[in-house]
Image (cartoon, rainbow, N blue to C red; front, side, top):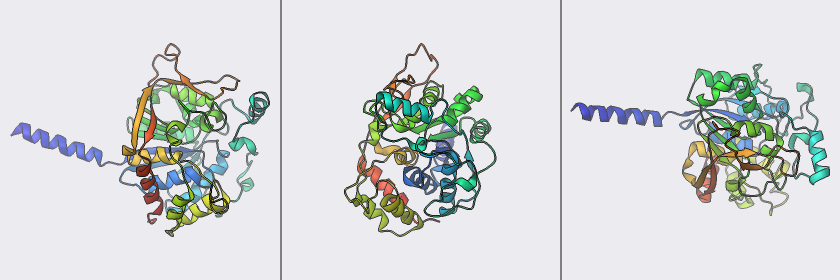
Amino acid sequence: MLQRLIIILLTVASMAIADTPEKVILDTDSGPFNDDGVALVMLLQSPSKVSLQGITVVPGNVWPAQGAEYMLAHTVMMHRTGLPVFIGAAEPLLHTAAIAAAAAKKFGKQNYLGAFAEQPALTRADLKKPFYGFSGLEPRKQNAVDFIIDTIERNPGEITILAIGPMTNLAIALRLRPGIETKIKRLVFMGGAAHVDGNTTAAAEFNFWFDPEAARIVLRSKIPVKIMFGLDICNHTLLRKSLFDQIVATKTPVTKLYEEDFGRDGFPGFLTNPAATAHLWDELAAGYLIDPSFVTKSEQVYLDVDTSFSADYGRVVPLDRGLAPEATPVKVMLELNVERAYELYKELLMRPVK
């Protein structure tokens, strides 16, 4: 009788744990909407799976003050203006526009420069007005790096970091407070390319190319679980106008913004170029927190990043374990059920905003 009672209690406890939303910090280099904005919508549309603790903004697609404004506007659209948004690092650890220009001259032009293609706004008044208007909100005063450290230390073993931009904020947090490495529940990130070519250079995916030194710090860390959504899995997805048309046929504030950004004002521009295509990037990493079953193949390896000034800057390489003997391995996602991922993507974007 006692044994049966213990089994029942353990079963109930495990069910309660399974039903508890995962505490997540979203670390993003948000553009006007596109994949970062979609990732945020997917998370906020899944409250039974994800409890978003805050949004931290890092330089990448744009400079962080601009990215914060975009994210604040999305919280208005989603009726979540109480969700805190924080600005972190102002620049990558070492990489600069000048270094990128020198590399382009010596090794070949990069396909995408992100924030390096424009000057950062010096004040809030200098921000570019989003095509959907300003949010009317301000980011929090606390630095994003401090927020990451404080949240992890208040919730040891409970916080998942979803990093969908360069990993500058997280790398600085790990350097300032190394003890938080083992207190992070898991890191799920979009970045890198283990077995395929890059998209900014032949060697490197954009997030890793923009701040390779930060990616190296994170990959060499003791974070217990590291899950990589790189180009290896993202390249299997192809966003076409037919999928775009299905989404925008449903009229909500989200699909209206989606239509403007993916159709007219942003990339890939389906309404002006019906043959255009794109891939799912950040959306896959976010979707994994909601329904991991769409991933069908992965591998576990120790990884590092090439940080030499060369054509390989930002390339994912095997880790020399002697350089970081305590580093944990990376679970690299390789293949997926594409249709299942598309259905999750569509359903969360088309769902009414509450």
